[in-house]
Amino acid sequence: MKNTELKTDDSILKKPIGRAGFLKYSAVAIAGAGLMLAGCKKDDDNNNNNNGGSGSVDLGSDDIGVLNYAYALEQLEAAFYIAVIANKFDGMTIEETAILTDIKAHEIVHRDFLKAALGTKAIKDLTPDFSTIDFKSRASVLGTAKAFEDLGVSAYNGAGKLIKDDGYLLIAGKIVSVEARHASAIRDLLNPNSKDFAGDDVVIGLGLDISRAPSEVLAIAGKYIKDSIDASHLPTS
Amino acid sequence: MNILGIINRLGDVKIDNEQSQTRRESLFNFANFAKLAVPAAVLTSLPAFGSTSSTKRAAAITDVLNFALKLEYLESEFYTMGVAQSSLIPMTDKAIFEQIKKHEVDHVTLLKNTISALGGTAVSKPTFDFTAGGKFNPFVVYADFLALAQAFEDTGVRAYKGQAANLKDNNDVLTAALSIHSVEARHASMVRRLRNKNGLDGTAKGWITGSSRGTLPAETQAVYAGATSEDNTMQGGVNVATITTQNTIAIQEAFDEPLTESETLAIASLFIV
Image (cartoon, rainbow over all chains, first blue to last red; front, top):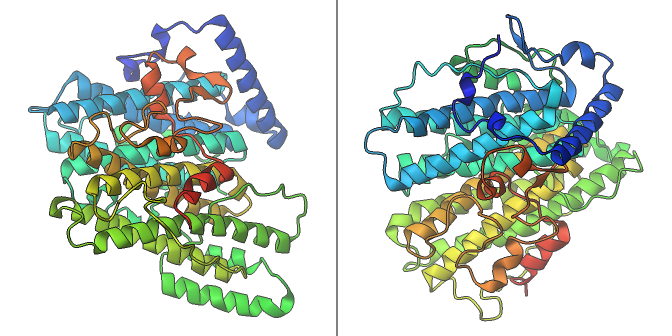
């Protein structure tokens, strides 16, 4: 049941990986997997590829699980922006086109990087469900973009504490601030020059962005993903 | 975020038995006062936790919080002064800087309260010179104000990021630090785009392209440089260009890079008397 629906454009598969790069990559992936195996004997049970068969997609456990969780969200975001640019809403301005095209590229980079980092531990290509989005409507597209970016920020903020490896945590930090930059720009497109770029609906208390646990994030994101995602093996602290 | 969990956790960081009750009380007061507040932190380069002593750990965390506090003092005073000028910020942009000012003032409060709650002593606010010895005129010239705002926000994002791993010892502090970090990134994106909207930098986007400072003055190049420069394309030991079809610009933009403590303080020191 190989599904490539999320890769209608700019697929990693289109670009061959150079042998040197692949070998370097494999070494990293193996090192990461080794680290995880040391920490959890059940890794092999929980980190199967899930690339075939039906049923839910198991994200896996430990850092692999958290990375797969991020990979699921990045797959969703990349697929969304690919669809947005392939089917532009009526009256999309030059500025809006530039911003949405940039974000599309960034999300594809995030998706491709996480897939490569996970190697054989990566979950399968998910199948999006964008039936509730009207891609011809600016309000629908930008509203969804805002929701996805804010959700991504809260997801990475909530996932940081679940990551064991310093290197993975740093990389999550490198990604989350870019998601926050996206959120800010999208929010400013919707309500220009207002305080909404960092609005009181997402920045709470004493100046803190919202953080969400994976269960909360997936409950929201699930509406846009046809596959059932099993996050039950993710770390909780 | 679970306030009770934080209180319990911080309550376990006892400096000694006599003080622990006082500390726990102060944490409750802090929680009541701050409502949703969570202890926040950024790290300096923490010494390895060779000692598992909680006393030592608490001290290390307050050192880190103090490093963050210095940056937040700088931002807080900068925006407080800027917003107070009657003819500096155009009405069209005012709401943006009122919001940023509010967050930075809140971050100072949060950090000071947390340092105190952990038994540390908050550093005093430095004396700032936002002209950097006469190079800038940010409270009279709006372009200078915007330029420094961009430099400060991009620096803040990179500085918090650079220390995240060192906060792993305390989940709640780590989460709070990440939550400040992304707010700084929201600010950075807005200010960068505002400079473009104001005709000051046609290349400025919400995200950092390569290690370009755009039209910012040369003094700010350190904001985009460093041991891991913003034009980095190596992530996790892999050249990302080899595993995606996206171009180098997109790869560089897709990942913000960290600054070290010393790199950050070198930037801040330009504005400290």
